[in-house]
Amino acid sequence: MPKEFRQVVWDSSLRDDFREVLRLALREDLGSSGDCTTMALVPEGAMGRAEVVARQEGVVAGLPAAETALAEIDPRVHWEPSSEDGDVVHAGGRLARISGPAGSLLAAERIVLNLLGRLSGIASLTQKYVEAICGTKARIFDTRKTIPGWRQLEKYAVRCGGGWNHRTGLFDAVLIKDNHLALGSQAAGGGPRYRPAEAVLRARQWIKQRGALSEGLPVIVEIEVDTLDQFMEVLPAGPDIVLLDNMTPAVLRAAVAFRNTGFPGIELEASGGVNLHTVRAIAETGVDRISAGALTHSAVALDIGLDWLMES
Image 1 (tube, helix red, strand yellow):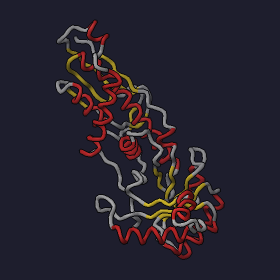
Image 2: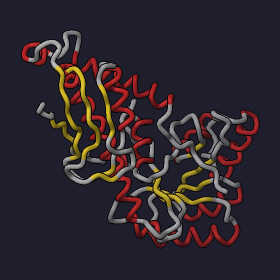
Image 3: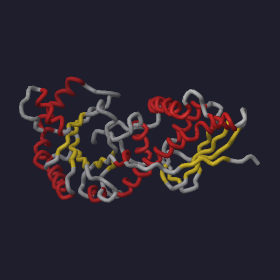
Image 4: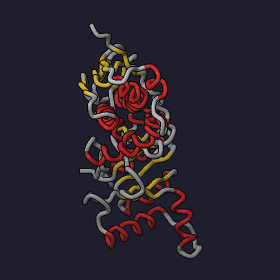
């Protein structure tokens, strides 16, 4: 079985991370004075009800975060979800119903909608990539190309859309890239750059001395190569994953064929030039993983609104 990166789920750790983001969001929106318009126009003690509604079809992500935000803003607000993260909703579909002090609902409105729109946009785009490669053996993975401070949330949204999480950060996997090969030799005394196989062996030695990095998960060793010569050289060193960077489908197929002849336990990841127009052809080469920064850096927010319910 291949080694897996840690997959992000909604748990107490992610909730704590979100609360850090929420504190900044509240400071951005309310400052030290609060909601001036609401204080001027809405009577103190007024109550309200509203529905959170999708304006377009997409995949929902971020409902637990929205509930957490409302509870932090005012524990008197009642949250009643109508769907779950990962659900597909149609235009006009209700995500949740909220009720409570009207001033608190107005203060939370934009924060909640921004949150749900951003995360649901990522989940919706991820689902399109997953659907595009349906029937192949490949899986879609995210990258670290995320908004600073939002990484866990955005990776969670990728999971809601059916994708997989690559490493969370620099701390939980070894991923040897070209700059490591170039700089590592200089740091070691200025000799020639590391050969890919040498770098993998050095990483294995370091892991043996260090042990597990976090949460007891096995440490994955992945190395990026950009030529078939590098690829064929590095396989005998035994990396867990080889990242094939910016290779054409023809070259990817050649790499898969070579891997299959003698190194079937090593997984191959394709990256670079991945978009909705190219991802199917990449998946059909036989690679195991496809990583796409676009899942997070190019996702467009899903249009989500809040509709007030008038008292009968």
